[in-house]
Amino acid sequence: MTDAALRPVRRGYAIASLALGILSLPTIGLLLVGAMTSVVLGVVALVKASREPEEYGGKGLAITGIVLSAVSILIIPFIGIIAAIAIPSLLRARVSANEAAALGDVRDVIMAEAQYQSANAGYFDRLECLAAPQGCIPGGHGPSVISERLLSTAVDKGYRRTFHPGPRVEPSPAKASPSSLMAFAYVATPAVPGQTGVRTFCGDASGRICYATGVVVPELGVCPKECTPF
Image (cartoon, rainbow, N blue to C red; front, side, top):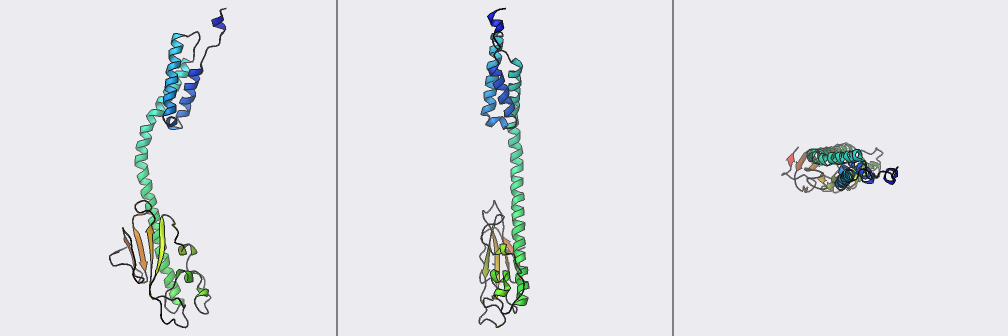
C-alpha cells in the first residue's frame, strides 16, 4: 500500500463551505459575506478534489455548501420585498393605535371634568384636583375621577398630553375649590409628527373634540376654531 493511500483525504475547504452554507440560511447569508465565502470555499474544494482526488475530497459537502449559500443569497431580495410591504403597514397600524389611545385620553379628561364639576359647585379644575378632590374641594371626600397617568406630560404611546387651564373663578366660591376654573382644554400632540401620530387632538369644557395636523394652541381654555371637529 502506497503512502498516498494511507494519508487521510483532506476535506477542510468542503467542510468549511458546508458549515457557512448551513449558517447562511437562518442568518440571511451571514450578511452576504458568509454566503459568498462559502461559495468561494466550495469552488476551491471542488477544484482541488477534481485535480488531486487522492489528496482532496468532500465534493458532496462542497456542492451542498454552495447550494445552501446560493439559496440564502436568493432569499435576500424576497425578504426586502416583504419588508417593503410589511413595514409601512406596521407603521400605519402603530400610528392608528397611538391616535386611538390619545383620543381616548382626551375623552376621559372631558368626562372626568364633567363629573368633578358636579361636586365643585359647577366649576372645572386642575387635573391634580381631579385626581384628589378631597385636597381641593372644601369638605370634599369624593374619590379620584381621573387616572394619575393623565397628569403626566411625559410621552406615552407616541403622544405628549398637556392641560391648558382657562380663567380662574374670582372670587372663589365658598364651597368650591380655590383653584376652580371657568374653562379648560386638553391637548394630545404627536411626539414625532408623522411617525408616532399624524393628528393633534384637542378637547375643551364645551365637550367639543377636534383635530389638526399641526400644532394646536388653545386660548383661555378653548380649542381653536380652526381645529376640525371630530
